[in-house]
Length: 386
Image (cartoon, rainbow, N blue to C red; front, side, top):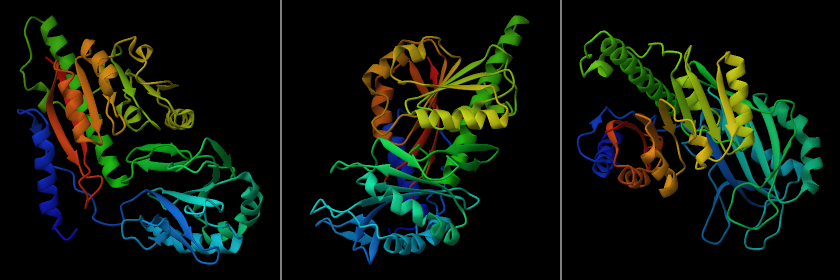
């Protein structure tokens, strides 16, 4: 903070580039808005029943209010004072970490580009659900953009932000979030990128690389059949609107609510996503059905061998911060799939995974600044089999 953003971005680009092998063609970093960019916020509830805080906890476990934080999206920022008043009016006692007493632990807020909101209350027990539900009409009146409301139960005293039980309090079960031409449906607890503007650019870039790569391979097959080979720079000059052949298959591991898979969909292209979260898969299937896309999704473990049983023409991976891990990296190294699109939120684990997959060479990369004012970076990398 306090360093000019352009300087921050150049330094971040240099740090990330130093972690990857030499010879990678780096595209211009995609910059973020410097404020008001968060599409999702997890706020710890602290303070007192009469004056709750929404933000974080200090070193003593007491609430620090961040409801006026400049990073919050505009709809979320407008909702924060309303939510604080609602918590007090509904008599929801904030959870006191030092004493391990109280009820309301977190409030999660997700906002769509059109201002629509998903609000999730994380409670210690089910006893307060009725009180919260009876007070919802007042909250709806004050927050007409609120589309989805749920209660999550987290009875344990531990450092997690949600439990296993979800109780929906509205007829709508997902929040529709447009990202360019693709609308994703986000259920309570489902993963969604924190920075909507940057996420939309990330998905577009991946879709463009996929189109160009598959079209170049088809061009090479066609020209080879005619007795000669296409120039080596075909990929760079191919339009991203190209149509794939019917035999082309794309597999998206850690697909979440389908952001990459849905952006990869084209007529005649077989696209399949695998994700461990059932609500996320249900949301992805809904998006595909509404858009009329022939994209399929299954609940499953991305690291399981059966997920890679039928080797695709192109593979997309978007793992959590820990990266692919040695087991999955070894599986990818042993495959014949010629192209992998790797989206990483941790350049350190990306570098470790690349070292474990020497047959996959990173040829193109781009930094997407999901979290300005921090050291965190999202990197999209195009890998080709040597």
